Image (cartoon, rainbow, N blue to C red; front, side):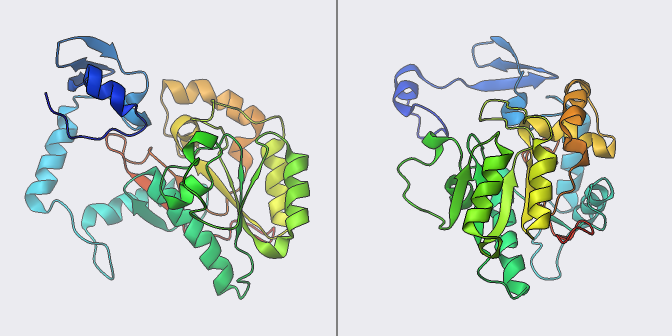
Length: 296
């Protein structure tokens, strides 16, 4: 059978030879392929199927909304009532007071939005030289131009040349080296530090004790925006800040608390994959960048 569909993160030669794995049905945590084989969906599709498959009430709610208006532009003054309602809900559980919410179509959009906001912020502050983005090895930040440029997993940016300039990689687990790097570059040249509290695609890596507090403090003291990238593995756990919990959340919460993830004040948050619960929706940045009295 001819298959014109191009798969992401795939060996297309193998798929052309062996055929795709076609899922046709989902119920709760289980999915079935087109041959009737049943699978436990441990990954939750691509980490966004947080409430399970086959939720008829969700389908009915989507159908009811589509019967009124399925979607509309949010450019200019336009929007829809559900968009306003969801933004208010997300802001109410955000760790940043008076947050402003910018919705995206997924994590890659969220990262590129947060990256642009970080640089634009300093331009508006009269400091256009602050444009360097610092990121960690093993980090995954989506596959748009910005996310590919700050990819800490080498195969994710090999062969693409320099899509976005002025980005610098640091070790994922060495706060002292990160601080030495930003001091070498100079705080007058650095816009932001992008950091997954728990690295997901890069190996499910929990940072060393006090790492997050140390790098956050270093950013605050040097007037550098700290951008925690909350998604995939850590999204459910950090969502506990708003009382959103499930079994995975409860299992990860003690580890996060021990590592200090609950107590790191963000300057600009990119929340990926978790907002939609049933669909891949992202939250591209909390627009209120001032998050405390520490200069950021």
